[in-house]
Image (tube, rainbow, N blue to C red; front, side, top):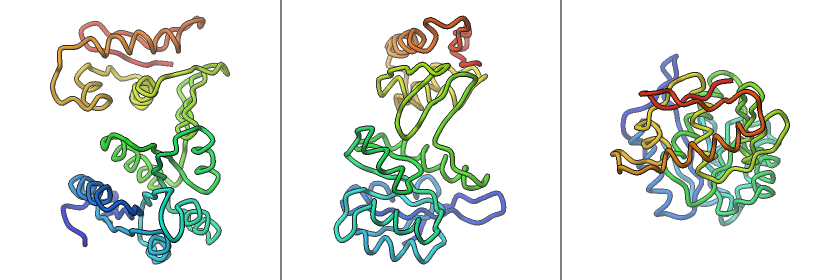
Length: 237
C-alpha cells in the first residue's frame, strides 16, 4: 500500500523505497517513518518475495535486512547485481563488525547500517543514496582535504594515519564533514547527531568536540575542527 505525500526527483517522479525485513514490527515502524518523510514504500517479508519485487523494477533504494527467511539479504543483493540491477542498497544487520560490513559491500551493498539504529540515521542514509543515484553515482567515502571517512568500514584516516573514533564521534564527524566550511550550531548537533529536539543543558557536545578535535588534529600542523565564537563549530580543510 502506498500513502502519504511523496518525495520527488527534480523531474517530478516520486521516489519509491523497497524494504525487505522479516520482523513485522520493525518493518511497520520503518514504513511509517519513511512514509511520514515523504517516500512511497513497499515491503517484502522474506528474501524470495523481496527478490521478486526488486526484479519488477521501479525502486530508487532497497533497504535489505541481512538475515531473512527463504533467501538471506546477501544472496538477494548478489543475485540482483549479477542481473545488472544497480539500484542502491542499504543493508540492515545486527552483525556490525568490520568484516560483516565488508562482506555486505562485496555482495553489492552501497551502505550498511547496524541494528539497533537511530531512525534519523536511517532516513539520512536513504536520502544520501537517493541523492547519489540522482547524480549518477554512489560513493561510500567522504573526503575533506587530507581527511577521509569510509562509511562502510567505519574507518577514518588523516594524511594516511588511521584515527580510532567511537560510534558517536564517528557520527559527529560525518555530520561535520557533510557540512564542511559551514558554521554548525549546538542546536543542529543536538537535533541531527543526538536526536534531541530540546537543549538538555548538558556539556555532552563540548566533551565530544574536544575529544574529536584531539583525535583528528593532534600531531598535525593545521587544525581542521574550529570553534566559531558565538556560532558553534566548523570543519575546514
